[in-house]
Length: 132
Image (cartoon, rainbow, N blue to C red):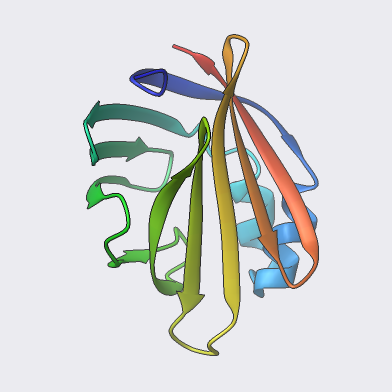
């Protein structure tokens, strides 16, 4: 259960461009890049509980691998989709409710870091977390 624990965002790569592709306005992009996101992950077999805490909100998400669920991004964009395991990676495929476009996400533990990769409309971004 390598994902288990609390992770604090350490740095971003191309995150503002990713948010721009999503249609997030410039003010929210600036704030989003410095949201102090902290994620607590608890895995029990195929079930995950994730708590996301940032400067903007705190939410609890529960999901089971391979089972669709609904999720809202911090800017209010609504998605539906699921997470699956691909080797040692969590791979998520989510569809925007407003325009039907696909958002792909990956979570992977690399060394002592949790790397979240997002891909939307050809724009790839990463958020790298350290255990907190």
